[in-house]
Image (cartoon, rainbow, N blue to C red; front, side, top):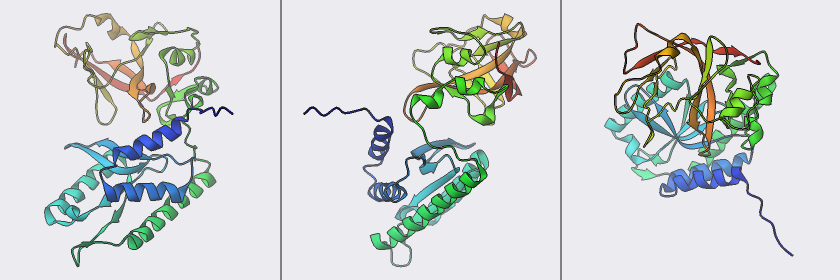
Length: 294
């Protein structure tokens, strides 16, 4: 009898996530055990989540985006005075930058200079899992819990067409440019262009807001999401000056946690003629919502 294997993207994601930390034995043990105890496919997790702060980039050992909670796994080097001060400053920056709640599991006994036995670490893991489960219960009671979905229904544009407007706070994400345009009543089988004219006053813009090798553009989004700086990698002039007349409904080109290209609505931006030059266009956020339909 033939056995057919169906590709499961969530399984692949979990295995790939654990492979990232395979050389960190305590981190691998703790994360694996947390996933085993939670045993909840509705709860999303991210290993080594990147977070940008004002001073540097940081990585969180384990992040739960549905609850905005991140877990630090503290080994022996975290307990020297210099590192403790760095950790304290880093935690404050992450809290200020992303409004996240920090939790920690220490694997080192500062009194005898030895690692804790696994039985002691296991109790800390149990307590943390109880905390996460409680957060889920509270979120469900409030009607605010959205289960973790990794199939393409998460990116179905029709779910946004049922509303009068799309809003940044609703985390509007689609897989393709023509899916974004479908929200506004356009029906294309495909669309690959930097922008699409929607009305006499608005265009839909699909910028990559990060550096890409062999790309012509180097666009950057400010940390608070309120300003986009548009420029070319080689510093040459930007020729589409006529676009100053249009406001831009921005679907930023991103990579999600599964490595897929997605387009995320980040707001409506207006080009500032006072702040812009021939080589550098400045676009300021003017609205976090936009009407749906044609």
